[in-house]
Length: 512
Image (cartoon, rainbow, N blue to C red; front, side):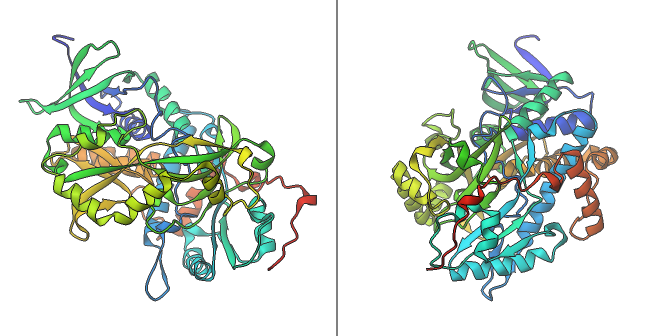
């Protein structure tokens, strides 16, 4: 080091699952490259990737109703569901490669098998769910999905939700046993442990203050360490994977692609069950339909979770608002992100999303008892004393000008913004995010290192056998890969369906 300057090949900002995934991929593809990771907190996976800040659904579109849309003729468009499922399969393959290569161990510490269930009530919603089931179940990626509107069958699937339920309107559910619960916090920590063993320079308690281009085309990153000491790191490539904190850092780069992009922060709360007897009565992730005006991240769901190797039960999320872009961020984050080049974009988004604003205000005003009332839509006999409120992670929804939506269109999804020359990339947005990290980071590699992709392709295919191949068009390959990854990751179906529901409590299903 001279004059506080350090040269490295790659700088990864943020120690979440995205940087962990990109760092691990690059270390396999280019073992000699020097990689430096900068994280402002004292350990990895503490913001969006953390198990308490992330629903851990293993988004494969098995149960999330917002990934399938109803057309005017009543048919269901499943194209987005197929796309997201294929992307999640890439993550499964990469994780399997890491386990088989002994680069990470004990997959049960970060991934567990868990049925994914979609649940609806009301005649129109039941009709939609049946049409959705018929569209999906003919597709090889969704083989094994079941549909039922029979309360006795639903009692077997979701006993906690059927117990004491007054059946005054039609209800239905779909269930598929190949779903998962993923602890992205644990996965991030495992991957950074591995990277550390590969001599990756990981610096915690390091806050990035600025990013700018130098005369020789490198990126200079200004970093403040815990004691307030300033350092300058130079690299050919910078990846900004700082969750909600990525947008302000992207804006500091000044690249044209960072213009006319804004962010809207959405916070969340979950109810967590602390009564083991109640937790034992539910074994699934059950997704319902979002309220009108609610963002997709606010789809209500009742989730079995495995956190610290213990079974937990969470319900939510309840949306909230904070001007912070990270849980550990500043109340000035939102105002600070408004620039001359995006102010019109931001104002247009505000005018267009009055329903969302109204929804967030209503959610903010809910008392604990009102939240418990919403929970009772899922668990009719929920007792307030059994549930605590926890604050979930911050998400920043991307706002940008689009051809389809015009000025200030709110984007619900994961976005990668890349400089034209591929020297810097930033990850913005929210769900499906972490679940599709491998797909997203392969996109970054293709856009930012096109000169290396041909030589790297054999290794990429070793890590991800279906790379470049459509699984939906190759059902036999999908079945083979799905079975192989299930075996490696300990997801075989013989350890599913372990609901503990006392026989004597089986409800007399009574139609009113």
